Every structure is written in C-alpha cells, then in structure tokens.
Image (cartoon, rainbow over all chains, first blue to last red; front, top):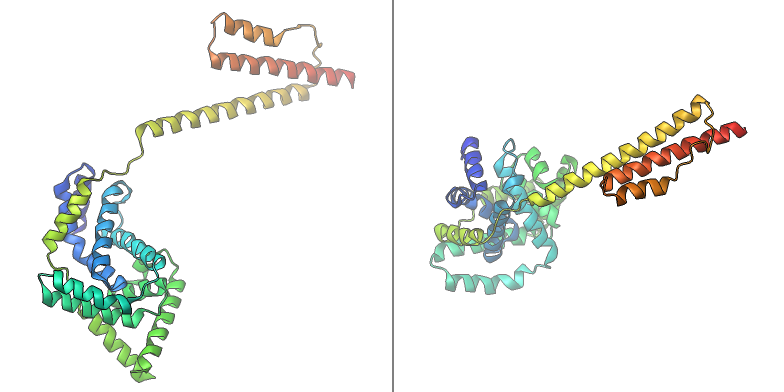
Length: 181
Length: 133
C-alpha cells in the first residue's frame, strides 16, 4: 500500500469511515500477525495482540503523522503491546505449548497451517526463550523481519548502540544454545 | 566457532523464509472490525480545550499585571521625586467595595481597582521612605 493511499484511508478513517479502516486492517493484518507471532510464539495470544493493535490504531488515529511511515507507527504499537505481554507474564512455553497445540488442532479448520504455525512457534520459542524481552524484540525485528536499524530505533525508542548491544547479546545467547546440537 | 555461526545464520534464514500464516484472514478482519465498531476515536474534548485556553490566558494576564505593577513601583522609587504622603488619603478598600456594591463594575474591574489602589499606596510608601532618609 503506497503512502498516498494509506494517508487517504487514514484521513477517511478519522471521519469514522469503517470501510476505509477495514481496508487498512486487510492490508496490514498479515504483517502485524507475522511479527507478533514471531515474538509471542503463541497463536491465541498473537490474535489477541493483533486485534488490540488495530483497536489502538483506531482509537489514536489523530496521533498519526502523515509524514511518517505508517508501517513504522503500526510496528511501534504492536511491539509495545508485545513488550507488555512479555514483561507481565512469566511465560512457560514448554508446558503450555502441547495443550495449546492440541486445542488449536481440534478447533482449527486449517490443520496443516496450524501445525506449521505451531511448529514454527515452538522452534522460535526454543531458540529465544532465554533472551530478555528487549533482546527478543530487536532480534525478531532485525533478523526475522529484516528491518533496518534506523527503523528499529524509531519502533523501540532505543538508541542504535543499545540495539546493537542487545543484538550481540541475543546472538551470543542463541549461539551458546546451538553449541549443544 | 565459525561452524556455529554458520549454523545460526542458516537457521535464521530458514525461520525468516517460513512466515507464520494467518488462516481465515477474512473472519479475523471481521472480528477486529466488530471490536472497532464499538470503540470511538480518542479525541480531546472541545470543552477541555476551551477551559485550557481560558485558564492559560487568565494566568498570563494576571502575571502581566503583577509585573506591570512591580515595574511601576520601582520606577517611582528610582525617580526620587518625593510625594507627600497622606495628602490624598484614600480609603482604598472602601472605594473598591463601594464601586462593586453599586454594581458599576464586575469582578475583574474590582480586582484591577485593588491593584491600582495598591500601586498608589506603594508609591506613597516609597516616597515616605525616601523623604525620611
């Protein structure tokens, strides 16, 4: 979605145009889903967070500056919500994942995709579960989402040096883990 | 060591290529829009903006009056022209109260009256001090 289109849709959304906002949701929900899933590694939590992200976007439409990149603003909201979730809950993926995977498999209409997502979630979780929330977020944004350092600075509010340090520490932790295999 | 780095890069590449997919995207959009419909935009109430503007203006006005009054008093003291104190005895309080009770002035004008009379009082006091010195 190009800048003029998104600005037009945002403008219409501020005038309570739900159709315009639906187009924004349709255009960006996969992007938000992808990054949130890679951080939280849990399908249900991811869906809740994506929903909350778009509700926040809707409620704060007036705070968006058209000169800034929309996706960066959207990432910022989603990442802040992820950070809150990572900090607030002492997450134990190992014990939860089996139950949740089974629940998802029973409920899902698209079993193949559910299995792919759940396996992917388990792998990322196994790889990154010893990282701090901030390390996990910068690792995901830089290595998995392939965002530029400048954009990560804008999204996380951390300095570029701090991000580099977090990336280094994240990489070191994951390397140590891989030494066992 | 290099081997582990390669292993890590390889793994990260594979994870990057394998994007988590959102299935039933349309249903998911519907559920988001359902929630959105129940919420309204967060905007600052117009009344609050009006109150902010009025209180800010009042604060600036009062500060300005205070500074003006202070400056005026200082100027009289520095000119060193003695004014005979008590030659025009004005009962300040009664004057302002009287004007207000006659409904000739509103609250702001009464306040300005007090400031004006206080200013005169200050001038008289300064000149009295200068005379005595």
